[in-house]
Image 1 (cartoon, rainbow, N blue to C red):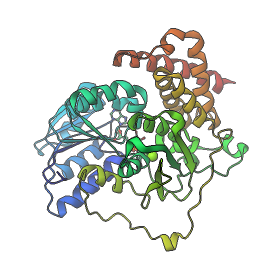
Image 2: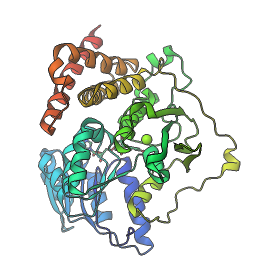
Image 3: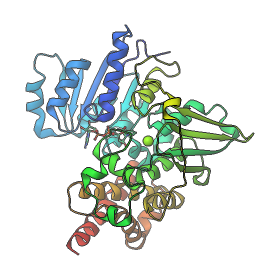
Length: 398
Ligand code: NAD
Ligand code: MG
């Protein structure tokens, strides 16, 4: 099976990953590959959704924001596309019978739609790491039950997936990280950093939330958890290496001393095309790698004192799935507050750490329990968001 004839849906079609996915589909269609699109969905950008619908020609389009339904219907009039809005419409988009679903909504908001695709046994191209991070064991169990296949799109996990030839013979996995825009910045500079500086990633062009996560290294913390779940490894068998050029996308160390890595220019079309054509490969026009011009690839150990988010993520994973869900939710709140200019850059990790510490005291029962249902995940998520907002308000007032 290749991309030929594969029907697809794109969740989060208006975002950075959604746009790259459309470019890959358009390029393959121009080569004569038939890729029918079942459904697309987005948060609240009607114009961008309408543009995606004109290009992809889905049967169904959904917006998260219900108040925009009439506006969306007007924007899509004449295209013969069913339009809906609200949380159930996002789930409906994922539940439509596409062979392959791109999960690229940002944050835990992507969990319910992604689960709708997982439950019906689809090939799920997983860009949205937060949904796996906050409900890993439940999502993996549901995939095992339905036969759904999670195809990692996150560049590091896609790299590992490409070179994981002998899963039983793995010593360890190494995730590479660019180090973000503040890799060499002083504490003072980080304390004063503005959202536009945090979002100015040196190598990748991405949505605002993941750009901030890359600057704090929480992105790598979430990815460490994502890798541990996807590849069924304990946290101590996943390490992180700073690699400022973002050419080596991750490495698998085998028990015979061999290390396999996947290299490519930093362009998300490459992992997206791999996931779309899997288990085949597609030909696309992403930039070719010219190692002679790049000349040097460098590596260094991450500094967990300057970037405490990485340590927080590791500790949360060791402590169990509820801590991880709380970490993710608190980080989402803190990043949104930072982007809105309400708190400083260094407050992001501080709020996340203080939220977990607070819950360990005030909600000890909730946070110690391994969630046995998505409702229990939602309860931890809500408790963490509530605590994080309170802590953020008191920090902003201080
Ligand atoms: P983005 O902000 O550019 O796009 C997010 C998409 O989600 C948009 O379509 C938006 O409309 C939609 N959305 C936002 N809130 C929503 C809600 N409440 N309900 C429904 N839809 C909502 O983000 P992105 O950079 O494309 O990242 C998407 C996901 O992919 C994230 O989880 C991110 O961590 C992951 N990812 C991104 C990259 C990258 O290069 N951009 C790389 C690896 C992983
Ligand atoms: Mg990544």
